[in-house]
Length: 193
Image (cartoon, rainbow, N blue to C red):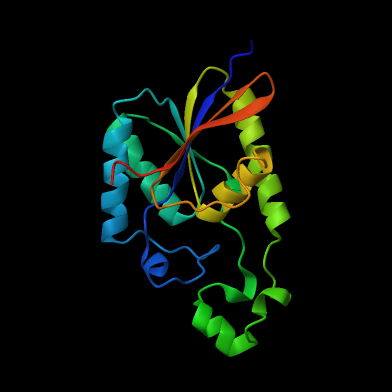
């Protein structure tokens, strides 16, 4: 039986654009007051557990969430990885559904608006998680990322379990891998909220 890392996937705290249902993508939108409170709540939950390392998306909403957690659980360094950045939303970035319909019509999803392909997001997210699993054997690693990256990565790694996903702000999802098989023992848990 091979020993592997335990990965805790966390979506960043809420932002004003989340509240407004705007496509955030790569836009560097900060946490709002509620988002900082959510990050503090999950940090308090996690300090009762033994997490050793934090890897974050470089976007400010993820980094700020990771920093709040790091202070509470006494992890000194936060590593960053570009591969767990949010999906690039292309031309729809910063828009609401209503604005997209007004600009491109109800079939806007069928147009090429410069969005990163879901398959590519899933591939980079899954590759990152595979590397973390190998590099940090027997360690407990927190990964602070974004809804689309987490959801699409889960669908790629566990396609029988996840045909669709929804990831709440500051939710915790736990992944392990045993004998080559991925396991998700906790999904989208927000009991700390």
